[in-house]
Length: 496
Image (cartoon, rainbow, N blue to C red; front, side, top):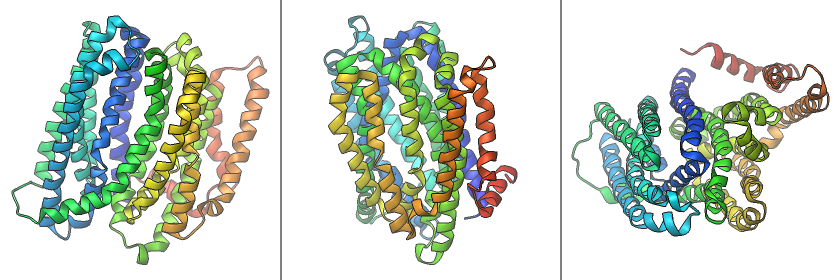
């Protein structure tokens, strides 16, 4: 697991996130302007519903990634069986999900969601297009899992850039041509088709699929055995992450969905870049021997988490200081006044959540997916208990608090993963950097809020030097070790 190879894969993953995020940042205010808050809320709900249907993935993509990573160099025939078995599973369950969504589209658009009558017909049509979108998303997820198993992070990410860029262009055309909700979904569908064709052709050149005999029963058994834990994780993630929006759309209004979804997606965009950077450790850890490489794994693990604290905390601080100003600049002052009240809660949620990425990949790599599924179920249970009373009584704020409360189980997940996978107490190992970051961030926040904000020199741009100076200040106080600093220097300066 050379650092140059990891950096190359991480860069592909980050680039696969960066351009689509720019498309999202550009399209969001345009869609709100052209479709209205209600229209944007409906599109968000359609995407949430297709996200719920992704439960039919059952964790197959993670299982395929692991199987391909284990067999690709040692047993090409078994790898081929994994590919065919995975394609069959994704096609079958993708088809089931698409048919289900198609048959329930009218019921969802007219009876379940609080959609204004004048938008219901367009919403039903958009939901029906969403059925086809879901099927293609499942196939794209299959190719993503297989490519990562081969440690070819470039293929799914370039494909993603292609499809989202094409969809973005077509969505703009649709918005200016009054294509409505259905036009937006058709544009999304066309982008998916193009990206999927590109992905399939490239993968066929890397590892050509050909007919091969069984035993497929053992292959499918291995996939199901591993994916059952990921299934509960995926189910819990979908319920915990999106149930609040669904309740807002069904007992409140689709407009509230928009006010909630925009800052949530912005926070997700920031979280995704870290997830994608750390995802490179999944196939790499899976190829290592935990018994013989435990010292190396432990050193990498604690160092990466320490660097993660250094990188993420100042951005979190910047959102807390000037999040409303960012929303005003991005969309509008009126939108910021409605949505900024929940921005800090959501930002805190994703800050906590980001530190579970590496533990999750480690647990799955070393055949302990049960740890991940256990805490995901706890997260889902918390959401199920508190979501209705909080959303029905407090609306947007209640939805945000639901998300934060459900994420508190992350501390137990991090502790147990460190203890069982690495044999250490991660909180104890990272006690010094955690204390330094807590001290520095609290001090800077207090100075900014109680001193700088009330001076004649105040400007929202004052948060920028805080964010830039934060890493230097924490490093000078010893938040990172000499080994961490060497790794950080290599990551920043030696991309070759």
